[in-house]
Structures are given as structure tokens and as C-alpha cells.
Figure 1 (cartoon, one colour):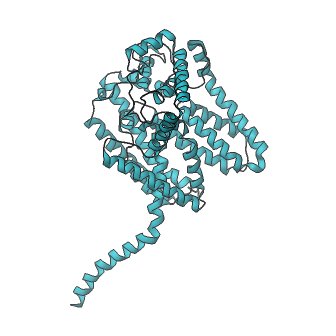
Figure 2 (spheres, helix red, strand yellow):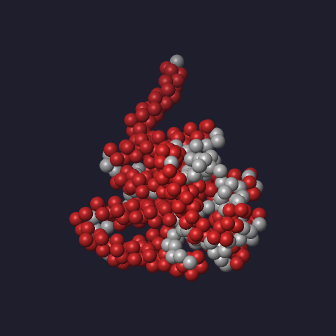
Figure 3 (cartoon, one colour):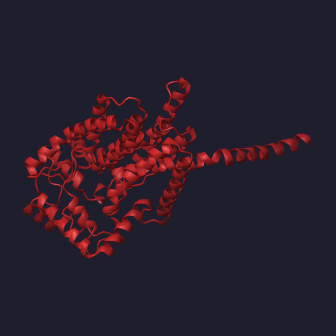
Length: 432
């Protein structure tokens, strides 16, 4: 981990390395952004439409193909940030370019911060450096990362912060209630960005019950304080939804729509295989129907329809669910080389996780909890590359432990052979 006793030279060296990685990663992504500036290649979807509504009218509304009024389809934090960018730069090409630059900056920051995060988790410097370097080149979801249409790049940074927070809590000897309030505030803010971050936080809290099993009553009270603060953070959003949508919605309203998109006759496993012609964000007819029924009733009706289809087609539903699980860890793709590289990343990361757990490394337990608690909701809905994006850094980090672990056994011998091969000609020439 990073120690206060670290020499100033090492700290300066790490800071310089982080700056170089940040600038290099940013240059790659901004270069791609300017090379491929046609933002209309991917039509604006719910997040961008709500952000436009916030920029133009100050309302979180109209995520679909026709005006439908106030919405809880997306959580408020990212649309407000994106809408603020639109207010400054406009909603035209300049504003969308600013949106892309914002997303590229978030992605580059993630690459740079992966180094200190790895050290904080107790991994060696070789692993930390390698993970940051690989992350600088690795773009797992092109449209999501380069164009900034969704909240995933920011969610990745938040997830890294939540991991650090969980480790800090686990290392504490005293469970103070002011610290619980601070944790609750951080988790509550994350929940306003992505509901999956709240689920991940709950998973870390459940794992903490084992860490503090000898003080479980104190830990239970500590979690209670944290929970109250999280609920206080979400209360204004829930009350707003109650007032404008007629129902107290603590997170998002669209579960029924996502469930139906994943489970109906002819549904595909992944986004590239799923027909979205009946999605209200693309279909004027379905958007008009949603507007007539109201957002809450529309999503509830689709949820009932999806559950009826699952009950009537359990085998097909199970096959779709299994397909979602496989695609999450072994993503599809239009290009076989890219698909193969992503499969290889998962395989190497899995081996790295096995090495960490075999060594009983604390980083292994932390990453294992994350791998267990983050994906389940995405096993239910159809696969999309932006769903796995926030935890891609964890795969890169686990994969980086493999060459780092093999280096002492094979790397030093390779360097010795290279040195020997270079020294033989010098020896022969000097002997002649």
C-alpha cells in the first residue's frame, strides 16, 4: 500500500508517471474523438435527451422519441452535469464535442488513478505501472468512452472510490459514527449517479460483516447510520418523483422496460442482437403510448408482460439469462480480433484473481467481492458493453498481476540471456 514513509523521490516519480499516463491516455482518446466527430452516427438516447431538457428548460424530462414530461428513467447526477455542459457550449456540435472531451478526460483520469489504487490495495509497483499502461490503450466501449453519451466513465471513477472507501473502513480499528455519516454521504452521491453503485456498496457492507464479526453489534449500528444518510441523500429525488410522477421512486422507473427488452418472443442476448424497434426512445408509436399511459404505468405494464412471458417460457428465459452471464464475461463483437482480445483479458484476469486468492492477498478478496456483487443485475437484462464498463479497470488490474507474478521466475532469466548474448560477441572480438 502507499505509505506515509515513502520517500519523496518515489512519490514524485509516481506523480510524474501518473501525469504521463493521463496525458497519453487523453491524447489517444481526443485524437479518436476528432478523427471520428460524427456524433449523429449514434442517435441521442435517454441520457442525452434528459440532459438537453435540463439545459433548455431546467427539467429532468423527455427521454423518449416524443415529449413525455418528467422522468425517472435516468438518475439525476449525470444529466445535470451533462446539461450544465450543454448550457455553456450549447446542444449542437460544439456542445457534443465538449461532452466528448469531458468523457475522454474522465477516462484518462481513470487510467492515471489505477496506479495509486493498485498500490493502495497492496499490489506491487510493477503491477500498478502495467495496469495503468494497459488501461491507457484499452478502450472497452468506444461510443461510451469517447462520446460521453452515458454515465459509465464517471461511474468507473466512483466505483474506484467506493473500493477505496471499503478498504479504508476494513482497515479501521474504531468504527466511529462520524465516519459512518461520511461513508453514507459518499454512497448516497454514488447512488444518484448509478443504482448499480448502490448495489456494489451494499455488497461491500455485507462483506464487512465478516471483517467485523467480533464487533458485529457496533458494525450493525455503524451500517445503520450509513443507511440513514444514504436515504437522506435519496429522499429529495424520491419526493420529486412522487410529486411529478405520482409514485415514490427511490432510484429509477425503467426496470419494466429493460426486463421486457430482455425477455420477450424474439429477444436477443446482447444489444447488437436485440431489436429496439419498440423502444420508446426510438419508436414514436411506443413513445406516444407511454405518454398516454404515463411513465410509471407504462413500465409497470411491460414488467407484468415480461414476467408472464418468463413464466410461460422458462427454458427460453433460462437460456437468455445464461447468455447474459456469458456475454458479460466474454463479450461479443463485430470484429473477431477485438472479441478475442476481450476474451483473453477475462481469462488472464481470472487467472490473476486465482493467484491473488491463492496468496491470500487482501486485494484479491476486495476485487473478488466486487466481481461478485457488481454484475448480477446485468445478468438479468440484455448485454451491453457500457454495462461492464465501470468495472473494466478491475479486470485490467487483476490481469496485470499475472505478468508481474511470472516476472521473477521468467523475466530475470530472459534479461540474463539477453545480457549474455550481447556480451559473447564483445568477448570474442576482444579475444581476437
